[in-house]
Amino acid sequence: MKNIPDKTGHFGEFGGRYVPETLMSLLEDLEKIFKSLKSDKAFQKEFNYYLKEYAGRPTNLYLAERLSAHLKTLKVYLKREDLLHTGAHKINNTLGQVLVAKRMGKTRIIAETGAGQHGVATATAAALMGLECVVYMGAEDVERQSLNVYRMRLLGTEVIPVTSGSQTLKDAMNEAIRDWVTNVRNTFYIIGSVAGPHPYPVMVREFQAMIGQEARRQFLAKEKHLPNYLLACVGGGSNAMGLFHAFFEDKNVKMIGVEAAGTGLNTEHHAAPLSKAPIGVLHGSKSRLMQTKDGQIQIAHSIAAGLDYPGVGPEHAYYQKIGRAEYVAVTDKEAIKGLKLLSEKEGIIPAMETSHAIAYLEKLARRVKRKSSVIVCLSGRGDKDMGQIKDFI
Ligand SMILES: *Cc1c(COP(=O)(O)O)cnc(C)c1O
Picture: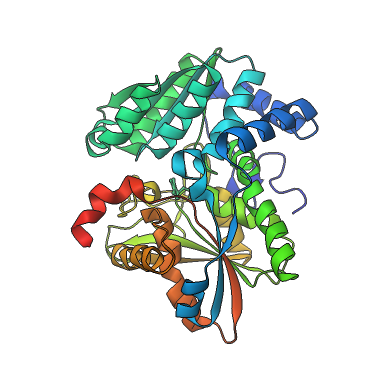
């Protein structure tokens, strides 16, 4: 893992910094501050304080016995990020970034959100720190995800509907970057996954890396050896990278990221850039990116709103390229089966996103030659999805 990312923020050919000139010096400042945080005891202490006392870390590593018995060939442990405050792993990252914003003397937070989950996690952290917060959201998403809009407003955040273009995530992203360029002096842009221009992918990874660090320690304490597999769903890739990173040097631990195949990889309605997309630039960095024939960004589709992202973090594209991790895809229908499976076997209702990883367990169980162990990142709980799910049960 030495020199990854390199000085220019590249993971091999992926990553980098594709932003307007005005943002370059800001990103350089952010990079300097971020680098200094590793040895900044006061920052680490404050971050760990909020993770523990506010968010509820460390999360449990739970042996799913009935699920394991059902799968026969797999012993499954669940890393319970769903038990965190606000119900998913996203709070780890937004707590980290608001503290960085405070360090930099910024008084205003902006973010963009598609499904609203990152918007809610950002609004939560901003309220906690007493910072002004503005979230950009495509007008269509504001309609579709009204509950999250109410949550953000209740938390004191201003939600601005974006009516340009397709009125979805990518348009909200453009608006947020425009705001950032204009208000860069007092404003901090919180990005929600291991995406964006350098240093965001590595910064978000570090703010999620405790998932894997805790899981590695907890698994070793219980089993006295390392797991055979790690499994996590991949939208932008932050919960997966959070789990994977601590195991990078453990060459015998296989990593599998599960993307959303939507209605099928051979249709246009999926969100699986690692399974099926060329290289492109989105959100200030180079990675795999879903594009139309004439090079426009393809709208992603998944039953899981949080996986509905046409790009993916550059470090995942790199892990795939060097063969360190494998990426597979699960359809909407299969994900619903995963949702039911975990609910019925363990009394845990996972988020629709997480259900993709659960669904893949059935396939993995058939693939393995002898009894194997696996840690699944249970990235979030399913309460938020009940309105949508009721038609399938
Ligand atoms: C947002 C979200 C995801 C996808 O984001 P990543 O950056 O890929 O982790 C997965 N699970 C849940 C519960 C989410 O809210």
